[in-house]
Image (cartoon, rainbow, N blue to C red; front, side):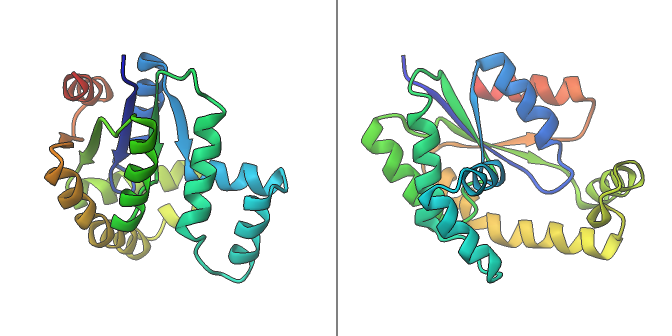
Length: 190
């Protein structure tokens, strides 16, 4: 049986954290969060972690080949996994192409890109509400929130086209109760 490899996408406030936890539990997937991977590799002082830290300390983005290497290491550490959920990656077409190339070698392609879609005004409302309770400063300023949403929309649009061309892009209505959204995701996975 082939592995279930899901790219979970959505703008800030779309509910990715809540829904990814459910998908991981339901389908027994391994969570691949680039942020978590970077922190773990830096803490372990691995070669990739050292390279990433040097770039981050200079305020530069971590190169795609380093991030792909970290993902490859995590996947190889979980060869018996039923699949993976990619969270926060890929963010660019080049990253998507690199991920596809790596997975093609393993004959374990991306199954679907599930994109939680939520209107901007609802996202702003959710994030301001979260900011009031979470203490996250980036969720308290409406201008910052709108900028984050705009960045997401601008940078991920090419990924929608990329995965649509492969027949793997699935838009999920991210408005409703948690259970309603979860149900839509299950239907999309099939």
